[in-house]
Amino acid sequence: MDNKTNIGVIGVGHLGQHHTKHYSKIDGANLVGVFDLNQDRCKSIAAKYDIKPYETLGEILEKAEALSVVTPTKDHKKVAEECINKGKHVFIEKPITKTVAEAEGLIALAKEKGTIIQVGHIERLNPALLPLEKFDINPKYIEVQRLAPYMSRGTDVPVVLDLMIHDIDLVLALVKSPIKEISANGISIMTDSVDMANARIQFKNGAIANITSSRVAKDRVRKMKVFQQDLYITVDFLRSLTEVYRVMDADKTDPSAIMSAPLVSKERHRQIFYEKPVIKKQDALKMELENFIEAAQGKAKPVVDGNAGKNALELALQIHNKILEDIQ
Ligand code: NAD
Image (cartoon, rainbow, N blue to C red):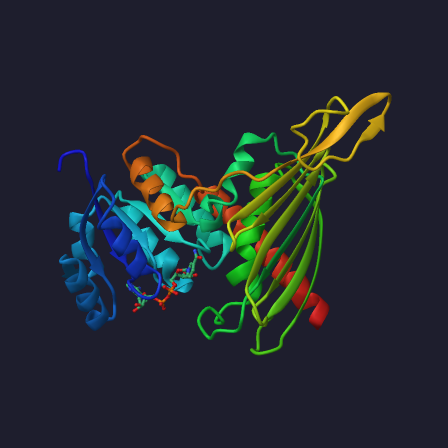
């Protein structure tokens, strides 16, 4: 038990129940219990995993060293602040907070208290994205599409903060450059808020990202295309399919150019090579939480830290505000 981290989950609704399930199986985690304002829900999830249902936040904070904060976003700041103030590490579901000022406050507090903030931008650990690690990624253009059928859950926030923020975080992780210009449009279809949005982000290094998100679609789509010098990668997050097209110097008869198109450029023989990396079947949420436990134990860095969560929120809010300006 000694090298296990005492972990608790705050908010065991739709997503918090899955945090609880994974922690109950992660080797380095000792799940001490759960807390939810809805005490019936709290007791039923606790009973399912044979753990303690806590009646107050203060009580669970006495037992846990690290906590998942899986309450609605509007409460992230208040709950996480109380955890960090007690010196606890926090995994905060995305978006980190409601406002950038709240995120900055939590980051400063965590620095002062020496605790870790990790943010639940789960797509960073999507198995279909992981093959990109073996390439030197320097995109010139990224196209992302995330479409989902309408569901009432999540519609209390605009689509940019619900769906697009996943892709904003991915784009910021792939293009490591300050932003030069943003343009964005959006419309309301089903709610009083923005349900469909398109954003074009221009970076100072010349890269461009074009992101489309909609929660009014017949079928779910989550696709990304990354274009850069001599490299084109497509990622289908839902089908777990990643395809890589690379232009490389090669002899005209090189048999490993599975799908080849001969190119002659500056007298060099070049060919297009096609690769379909093998995608490991892994649960991204479990991997995120394992990473958090290791980070709490000082063995790893959080894959998405508080700053990355704040940067994604800041850009999402800028995009959303541009859309509102355009609509009015
Ligand atoms: P939910 O409404 O299903 O569950 C929230 C739970 O928190 C409820 O049981 C509620 O009683 C409880 N709660 C509310 N305020 C509380 C408080 N102050 N203290 C303790 N418990 C409290 O919501 P959800 O869909 O599970 O979403 C939770 C968070 O997860 C949100 O921030 C959401 O944006 C995020 N989320 C992330 C993803 C992802 O892909 N990473 C997906 C869905 C939701």
